[in-house]
Image (tube, rainbow, N blue to C red):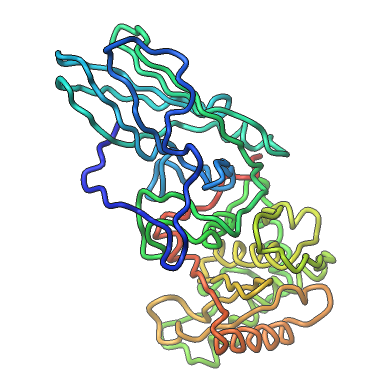
Length: 379
């Protein structure tokens, strides 16, 4: 168990009424306890304020972003020193339980966090919400149980993406302090190297449309002395070829309800969208963002009320033309040219930027903050 060295209180974003996640700080139902022995007095677990456990970001646990057990407090009411072993798991969805040895002085109370190795194959198979439990146990070093508890949670399928809620974050980031705005977590669904190989197939098809006869992103056209016109032309060749390959597949847009970003919705992973050759605005955005990241380009995801679309920088970071970008309206895939889609996208981008209704997340910045690609869907 890792200790919380410098714990600062986290709260709701400014302007929000404080809310709690039900019994998220409680230990749950105590199923076993030995009198006067060390016990767990508080547990804060990963999840939404509703108590749900969303699978689509489960791979982020234990890294820079979050922990399965955010904060566990253990108390020793005994008059002698105690050494206990703490273990915990998301029952049925854990490969290796979280474990840690804790030494306690008489009357001492310690807090910390720890993680379990989750079973992604089991999580991948969930197709509808399932009831599960988070289990904790304190034992002696010899294995005698001193304290055990269980608390219910609901595991959401990997395709259920949450738009309107906040995670309890043990690691505040520059992208959101304390509680994290949920739209950024969708960066995890930007998956440049899918287990099905669908993106590689698309890139192979797109190469036939390119004047370079390959799709390698900036490497295909950008040089240290490239002019803006040259970078614009190279970008149009590479991304336009991907667009042409998607159109040739018959990829088409599926409309979304007006309240799509209001709560939680089913979202396809890019590999899934490519297999069924259809997608709504966020599906198409994730496809293009994933493909562009796969070839070393710098995409970003734009959210406006009720809608999402993708953008990308014309040149690599650090180059003079990095500040120039193209915005692509992916909902036009089945009906329009790449040039028309970029003109429409730029118009939407500027209109919402001027209106103060645009939210943009750079994929590379999200990666640096710990929002790594999801392993789903598995092979």
